[in-house]
Length: 207
Length: 259
Image (cartoon, rainbow over all chains, first blue to last red; front, side, top):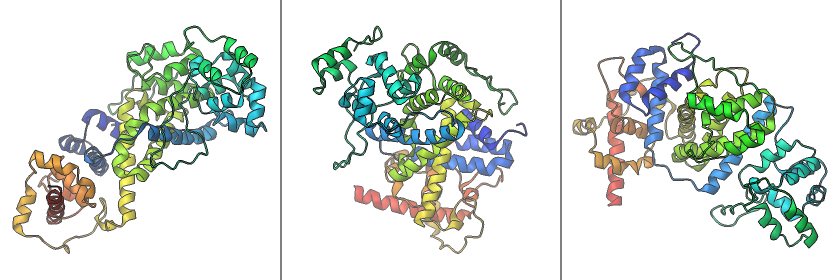
């Protein structure tokens, strides 16, 4: 091993070659790299314990919550490493940071409050959202279209700030199409509804 | 957008190389534009046309990070996390929910620290064998969290933790007959049954039991280069046998209640 190789590199190679915790492989590698024998043994013991301890399966809603938690970590790293353009945490939050209440944001983007809230929670499939809507939201928020599009393509989220009395976090409903969300929005006038339904959607992305 | 060549070297001094399939995916992805790329990144079906492997996603993430395009980096990061979260969490859940969440955050922080460090080649291996590199990060986080838990619960005197020094002959000696029992491996069906109850064991008995009965580590060996349970814990073989016996008695009691 080269002198500039680190323990991390060694463990990467060890996992790749071993495939799973294995005493024979540990013995071999400990002889090959005696300076790291202690670290290899600790790693293998941890690996063994992780492999054999019984673990409960996680629910999809828990996994969605973990992804959000992970994204907080990623965003913190991004702010340190790429301070020029932080990603959008939420549409509503981004609007509030610019002094726009939800109603203001809806009005400036040519949408309704229910539609903005659904887009905020990513309950509308991105592929069905007319590009004009993405453009209008980006303009209202003063952000790049790519930033808004990137946000809208994330996984659906539970309502923020809601409290749940059930023992388990409720399941997130399946995202719907933009057209279905517009059709089901009773706050829209007939004219406004039709205008939104008439916006062009990219070919093969109508459902 | 500039895709950087890999410069990190493997243990034999040879630079890492991406798989050909990954290189082809990256080449195609670079022509997609950010919108198309993000759509592809969100494909979860490995058989879907246009699916991008995780190694490709890491390469593209680094390229967009080098360009300072935080929006695309965030979207690709989320797509990558959605693919990894079940894998990571499934391996950490045995720690208990709270500790598993801590360890999960640890894994994510270290994973993205490697990916987003575009000034170095520390993250190169993630573009070669992503799941291997992730497994290593998960094991390391698991170990850190498990040791924190053991310290926090005061289950283990610090002197009993691996790496601690000091003698241990003050512990009571069990009978020679029980020592002999501890020398033998458990029958496979019993080991399988006991697996469900391993969480009931305290450390360090639990780790010692797993290493002996599930991984086949010897308690002792005359060859000093052979890893043994005794050397791992820096305890005498007699102490390890005592721990084995304590663990087996606890599991036998559990089995009695279970039956």
